[in-house]
Amino acid sequence: QVRLVESGGGLVQAGDSLTLSCAFAGGIFTNHNMAWFRQSPGKEREFLTDINRAGDSSNSGDSVKGRFTVSRDNSKGTVYLQMTTLKPEDTAIYYCAAALGPHSASGDPSDYNYWGQGTQVTVSS
Image (tube, rainbow, N blue to C red; front, side):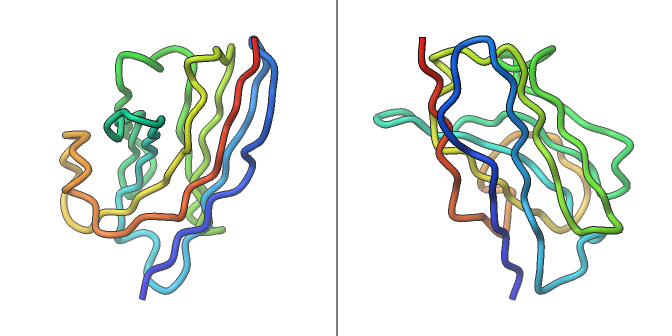
């Protein structure tokens, strides 16, 4: 059974940077496209960015383009989310997700088979 464990969340100030990690276990990492989503109270889960199995193609949502960067280390079974110029509106629980199959780049949560438990990111003004 695939397990995803996010880490690296915390409390930061506006303008700071933060890097989240997501460790993959229980399956073959390179068979899975990976993505990051976030969810704030009262809001739907929002697609942030994804990366294909090889790590050479990614897509990002408009709200984070130019500020957030996804990467993966296939030798370590880990995907990262580098976040810069953080804003209070980035406050949310951040989730990583894994999907088998072709890289759809749709940003649709229903395309993802596995989810982590989430890590809280709080950005103070």
